[in-house]
Image (cartoon, rainbow, N blue to C red; front, side):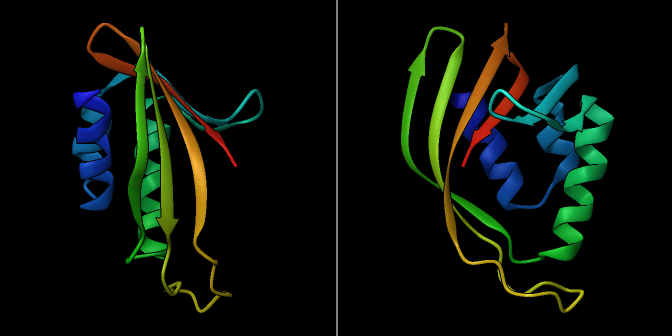
Amino acid sequence: MTTAEAMIDAYNAQDVDRYVSYMTDEASEANYRGDVVREGKEGTRSGLAAAFAKWPQNRAEIVERQAIGNYVLFREHVTRGPASDGSELVEPFDVIAVYSFEGDKCSRVEFIR
């Protein structure tokens, strides 16, 4: 659970290099049982960098947490804040994030929203 918590700390600091340092090279972020949103460590790095540029106040607060074997589940409350491109404000939302691990590295994060 410590690594997943460190990933959230890096996410909230908008430190994409630190965030992906906790991931395997082939790691991905995806919608639960659906489309991959960010493919591989480099795809995650560039995707998050773009998101952070658009929402510089973006944050995720861990509301609940649970570890089960090689999985960590967080219920996260996400706030985006105003977008830098002037697009419509995204209302705060909750998401369940399922972090899958291979050893001490995260291999996949799936979001249930």
